[in-house]
Length: 72
Image (cartoon, rainbow, N blue to C red; front, side, top):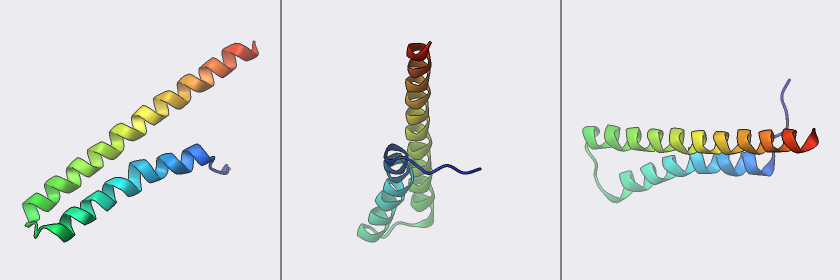
């Protein structure tokens, strides 16, 4: 079963996935990167995406835990 993404989820999707790829594309357009530099930039964009997603997930889980504690 799928659930509708909240506004926060959509924003986080943009920040963690689209933004690093957009940064990578701008880097490619501005400077003629060779293959090694391109792979390094892609690795940095991927790591940034993973780190931001983890931070967001931890924040969401903490919010849910606080919400569950206040409901008791």
